[in-house]
Every structure is written in C-alpha cells, then in structure tokens.
Amino acid sequence: MVASVSALTSSAQASSYYEADDYYAEGGLSPSEWQGGGAEALGLSGEVDRDQFRDLLDGRIGEQQLGTFRNGQLEHRPGWDVTLSAPKSVSIMAEVAGDRRLIAAHGEAVRTAMAHVEKHMAATRIRDGGTVTREATGNLVIASFQHGTSRAQDPQLHTHNVIMNATRDEDGAWRSLEPRALYQLQKQIGAIYRQELAVKVRELGYEIETRKDSMFEIKGISGEGIEAFSTRSAEIEAALAERGTSRDAASALEKQVAALDTREAKVAADHGSLVADWRETASGAGFGPEARLAMVREAEAKAADPAHLASIDMQGENAAARAVAHAADKLGERQSIFSAATLQEEAGRIGLGRIGYSQIGAAIDAAAKHGELIDRTFQDRRGAEFAGFSTRQNVETEAKLLRIEAEGRGGLAPIASPLAAAKAVASASAQAERAGYGWNADQRAATVQLLTSRNRVTALQGYAGT
Image (cartoon, rainbow, N blue to C red):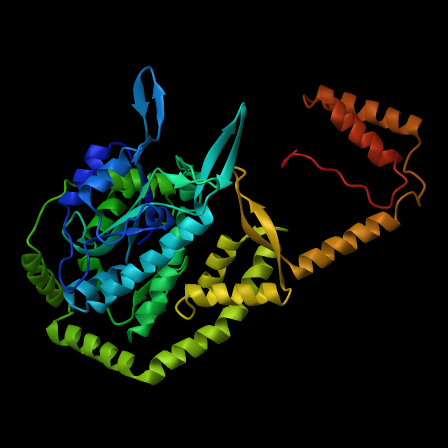
C-alpha cells in the first residue's frame, strides 16, 4: 500500500506491458488517461493512444528527438512508472463487495497525487558550458493505467502512472526530465495519495482505522479478511524473512528486491471468474454476502445524507488551519526554510481522514496571507528551486539573534592574546597530530579567531560532523 517508483528500460517492453494488462471497461470508467500540463500542451487528453504513447516513450515529440547520441546510437530513457496502490480493504470493498464508487475515489486520489508530483518535483537539467543547473519546470506528460488485480490474482486496485522522460523548460523547449526527486520523495507521493483517498472513503460513508505513515484501512473488515487477499504481501514477507529481516525493519531497496524476486509472470484472467473466486474466499474468511451487502448499503445511505458531507466539510475546514500550524511548527524546529510540498504532506499526516488536499492548500494560503508563513525559495538536494516557507517565529528569532550579534561586536576583552592563542593552537594541534587527527590551516585559523575575538557572539560554520 505504498507508492513505488521504477525506471522503464525499454519503450517496446513498456508499451506492450501496459497494453496487455487487465483494464476496467465497466461503469463508464476509462482504462487509461493522459494527465499533466505537458500532456495538455501536446493536445493529449482522454484515453491513451497506443502510437502516441510509444512515440513519447521513444522521446519523439513532433519533429524533435530527445536523448543523446553516443557512437551513433541514441540513448534515451523512456520514463518512470509511479504506481499507487489502494489499501487492501478498499480493494476488497471495491472488487469483492462491488462498491464501484471506491474505484472513482481511487482515481481522484491518484490525480491529486500526480498533480502534486508535477507541481513540486518536475525538473530538468540545464547545461551551460561546463556548468549544470537544475530548473523546476512544473509540467509532466503522464499516461495513467488503472488495474484491479495483483500478479497473484488478488483484488488490488492500483494505477500505473507512466511519467514520460520529457518536460518543457521556461523557454518552452522540450527537455529530458531530471528524476531524482521522484526517488527522494517516493514516500511523500504515497502519503499524499493515501491522505486524499482517506477523506474520499469517509465521504462515501465508511469509517476508517488510521495507522502510522498515513496508512489506513476501512473499519469493519477483519484482519483475517484482509490476510486472505494478501498473497503478494505474504510472499514478500517470506522473502524478507529468508534474508533475516522484516517489512518493518527492511529498507526500501530490500523491499523492492524482495518484490522483484517473488514477482510472477502476468497472467490474463477472466474478471467475472476472479470475482466469483474472491467472493468465495471472502465468505470463507467470515465476510459473507450478507455482511458485504450490509456494509455497502450502510455506507451508501450515510453518504446520501446531506448532513454527513456537511459534517466532513466543517471538520476539514476547522482542522486544516490547526494541522498547517502544527506542521509548520514541527518543520520549523529543524529547518529555517522547508518546502511547500513537505508542509502539505505533514499537515495531511496530522489530519489524516479529516482534511483533503485542497483544504490544506487553502489553509496554507491563508497562513501566508496572515503572515504566519513567510514565502521563501526552497532548494532541493540537486539545486532546483521550488516554493517554500519559513515561519514568522523563525524569522523573528533570526532577526533577534542578528541584533544580539550586532550589538555585541567589539565590546569584550578577548579570551587570549594573539601570542597566547598561537601557543595554545600549536600545542593542541600537535597533540591532535600525535593522536592521528591533524589540523588543517582553516581549523587553526578558526580557533585563533575564536580565542582572540572581542565580539560577544562568534559563529563558526563547518561541514556536518566535523
């Protein structure tokens, strides 16, 4: 029930993979759709066209060919697959109990999460001579494919979001995508999806049981019922156990390796037969047809009551401002500037199931308008600039510290004279040298400056851990 990010290695393999899998064709639900500002700029909408999909995977945009030619061969990575999977209980209620409203809710939550990716993670590399910089672009070309089963033929509502290796820079030119943020913020993508889905599940009349890391399940389905449809999860757990670890203790890479090692070949199956088998399995796990129908009818009746949605909306509006304030305080304790994306995620984590993505966004805007949040530019690990914030308290604290520093300049006697400081540094550095930790020239100079300063406050900036 997390987001997974994987690189596509072959356009031919990718196009056949998504074409061959099971699709929804019932209830007016499209099996695929284009998403993103980049897709809109190319005039792509609605269902994904096979030829257009293949061309984009190959890096062909109109007359332009993306990629690099080396030794006469084109090198171009097709793109990346960001897969978002629903909680197992949501899949059970959608596929086994037959509440198709949950499939639409999943689709809406996926679109919200991918819009978040586009706004906060899309970037490209700009090379100028020997200098390479990263530029945030804010647009992606995404082909989304919605499926309903796992490889083990369990009910598993999930969407493959294929992000093409193409984005437009600020001059309107198409360039290859810089994907590191997708990997660095993989957990955030999954959290945003689950946070939005949790609210929509409640809007549809269900109650949820929240867990850590924005995880949740629909209340009323037993652990035995969930376990009966968790074949893939059990396989991965067994593979991790063979390696001496567990799902809770394993790293993301270890989990990915275990998933790949246990992955079976894709098998086409008749959807009607699968549903019949699933319902028989559910009945064997104590979740029979009467219980399934009762849960769906109760949820539908609750959702039809205008007071229900009004209550959720009111809860969300009241909770969003508090969640944003709490999240900003928490992030501001460790960072003077934090990204707008991280603030959105943290606020959603605090208000899981009670506040939606748009409500959090509105609360962030209100806090910025009232001066509680101060607009700042946030640089990610690779140097791309995205929207960010500082808190009013952090700005006021920084101003106070600067004032204290300025007022304390030149007002005190130094700890040591220049001669005494030089002797102390020579002695200490010689002792460190004998212990195998020699001082460099900057360390010597910094220590002399600290000992001879007449300022009340002297700052020393160094590398982390030194």
